[in-house]
Image 1 (cartoon, rainbow, N blue to C red):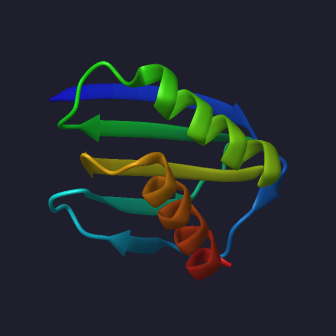
Image 2: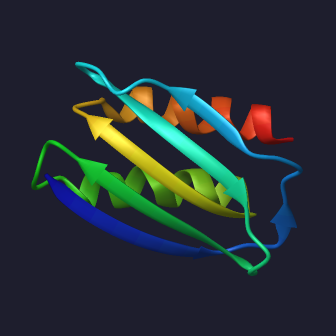
Length: 96
């Protein structure tokens, strides 16, 4: 297991918590909650080591489009970047 942390500036808030996805082969689980801080903090726990640059690119793209103040925990079991991007959008949709 590898744990990664990222922080992004934020200017907008979300209304509520969200939980999407499942931890299973090729999938991931996202737990999102509003944050009082003007930033997004992300913790990724992944079963696949060595992909920090990929995680950083996927998350940077999402937070460049959605400047939301959240605490986000991701439990990954080998999800592809496309699945991660889809789960991020689903979590945001539930949180608004």
